[in-house]
Length: 260
Length: 258
Image (cartoon, rainbow over all chains, first blue to last red; front, side):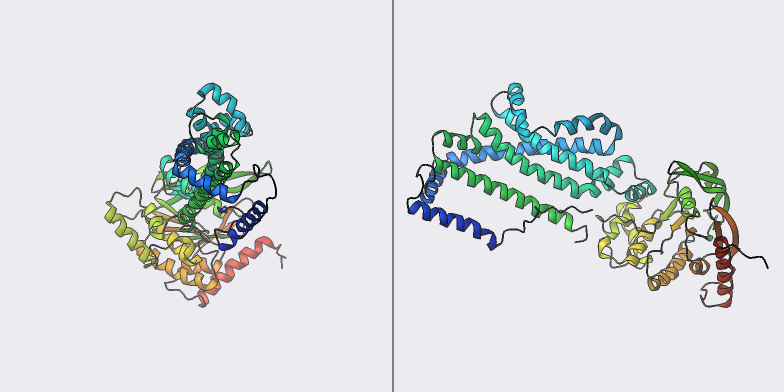
């Protein structure tokens, strides 16, 4: 009953994980040193490094990153909280599930970025539609996993709650939430990944303001492939960092209570 | 002291629907268990003995008849009727201590008093030193001891045991039978135990109730008037055991009249 919270086949950051990136970097350096390929499309690693240094020095890159992180965290928090509430309602009350379930399951089939035209029409062209989109990215996995987790609580545990005369609030707090915790945490983790994708996507597609996605879009417009690569590498590292944090955090939280 | 824990089951019937067909699980079962008495229910599997226990616990309701403890009708689960299931059903996210404390959540006591009572119960069931262990770190026997401590925490008037030792190996099992006896004599709680082990029933109980199947009904009751501690190999125990086993076999085999 315990879901595997680690990303499938992903075994942490050992030295072996660096072999492939190093090989790619080596090939890339060789090909640009030998003058193979178009210098404007396949820029040299040195130019990427200097672009990175430049982005850090003139604070453009840092400001963009901080703005993206701010949107990402606030959107994820809002979406997770809403998803938790919706998932609990659908998981605990058959009435709520019958009333809201079909709508929920229909809406979650819609690809995230398909909402953008509506969101920008409703919420303008600045931060609001971005944050709504990021929240939605976190909302669906959080709600879905919370609902599944609540439904999956063994009947035997509920019976113990009844025998011990736990009231409805105590039952939710002391039986259902702890029993559903592994599933809920997995949902929040999936939401984290989706939110980061939503952050960059919404910035790239909406523009206006500061952020890694906006920087990426500007770099493409200005034909600055070195800066494009800096942005992509940053995205990868931020994503990796957050999944590591959640992976270790959830492991500590859950491993204590359940057999390994 | 006036002893509480009088269990009175009157004309209880229960139907279930299996594959859209009604199945009579229990028909007209009446049983009276005196305060502080230890009664075992034995019978072939499917005779409704666990169903009867769930009705007494208040987890299910009878279709006909009534169940009362000390004159109060049973219509929902209550801390006055503790139950120990075959699977220990400890919450895996709580330590042994916290599992037992959950049984005290309605107790009229300060946090310190609860803690002390929980510690007493844990040592009563022989788990002192394992207060902070989590269920998955315990053996089956130890987990069942913790489950017994949790069910005793609210000081129930009746303790219901649903094959509590059924999943344990035979050594642990006979050891826990003696422990159960010790706990019963210490607490003086009325005990109603479901078991499929005839010897276990005779070893522990004041009275063994034999249930027949389809629909479940009481076939016979045998009083075990032997002092504790009982020896499993004693002639009296063996005689009662033979008698009960004959009765149990008689239900499944058609007897040839001589």
